Image 1 (tube, rainbow, N blue to C red):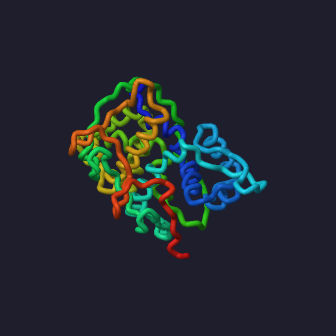
Image 2 (tube, one colour):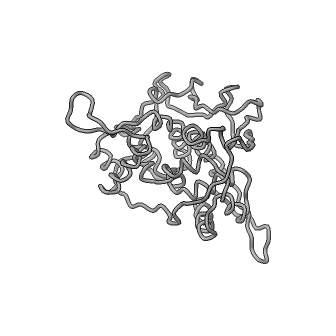
Image 3 (cartoon, rainbow, N blue to C red):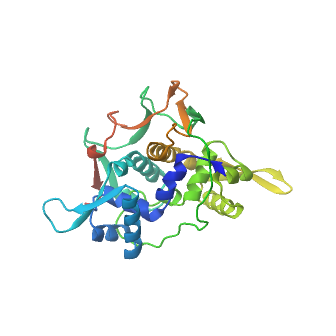
Length: 302
């Protein structure tokens, strides 16, 4: 048994690379099955399976295309649209740290001010940007115990697409639910193997595998605290530290849709102003809150 966290519920759906690629493709304007297959590069059966899962979980709906066309289209529900802040934080991380060259072929524009969008997480109460070191948390009324029940297999998917992607590198962490849960544990200052194992509910083999991979991609660094036998503590690199906004936004989305009736499992405080932290995404140019309808995706090679 492990402590409940709404991010667990979120990752039951979103801890899956194909689903994240589908959602990204929809933000890029793809609504029909053939368009989604072409842009994501996913095999037909896999794409169909994940679309069904998204509909079942209330993130998508399927219906007649606008304008009287016979074609059926997939559209985001309100629950799906509410993932927009998470998508923006993934975009910020990808632009800085992603390894795929294709990420540089797309850019977001904030149509409300006409500038290239630089999304900035800010505290709703004081309007100031914040980082991990300015956030504290305590257990909330929704904390409890639940069994860990995830598959042991790494989420490995073969896909092939020539389309540029906003998020393909960044979703490799979030798209593997165990890696995302390990990152969440380390964000809460759990650094040793046994602490991470207990917090995530993962088996020792899974924890070892994911830690090794997170170190290899320079998101974490290992430091020995005991040499005989060798035992490591794990710390965030700068690259890993800046993934915090992704995990936090996903957690808050999970609080809204999967939180307990009593309240969230964790309560966040912005230590700089002392207020309960309710993050928003603002435009780095005009400081206005960014809404999905105010964002356009620009192809730089068009």
